Image (tube, rainbow, N blue to C red; front, side, top):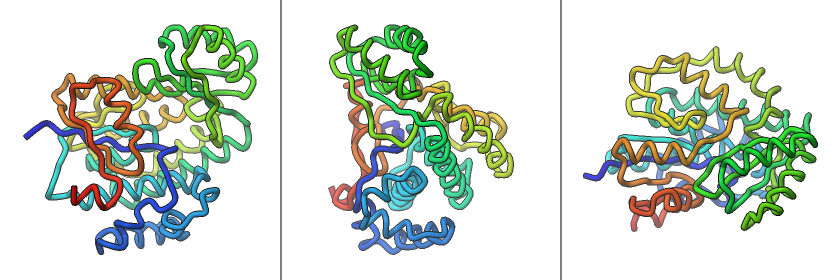
Length: 306
């Protein structure tokens, strides 16, 4: 059997209708959504399946919606496919920790809900933005951000794959960096439609409030390695709960080192990457990082029969 890694998507992968086909076909999935509706105190299933899109795009709804869709896939694949490694992009790291046994469903969903609420509040308090930069080396983007920070806060938010970097910060800082990136002949520079400057110091208010929440949740040790966004390195069976919490706490204002997560999983023996949840974003990134590994995903019901 190939060494399998499960990878879990983050915000931006959501779409209206996600999970609806699974809900109609599988009682297990109906049960997960009904539990989620109860824990959250609103009808997540309705917003996920029927929209409207504007509502689904609200951070405090998006994050639980993606998490629950990924968990539905974990349940459906239990006993069919299991992974020896796992990681998730930003929000997806919570799903990876759930899969690895660090958190139970209820605690993990509550954390995801509060994280979404706090990130949305922080985004409303301090208006910020994010931008994708394609075709420039990390060192060049770091120096561009340093130069642009004369206009306002700006830093790397996601190191997604070679030549694909996302920056985050104040509107003026990010736009200055976008201009400098164009001068440095980036292949593409695009401002993203987001509700805040995620993975930047503008999320500091969310980080401070989130600490109390994390402190009150029981974390277990993981049963398989979880490669964290903050370092790209694995949390293992030897890692204590406090270190897992610290990683999630720092993640709010730190860059997502996705490229490092994937490179390190391959180095440690992962040969097949399976994305569980909405969209195909991570499958594309993995292929760009290493074209030799097998990559597939489970999003819609037809993926299971295929």
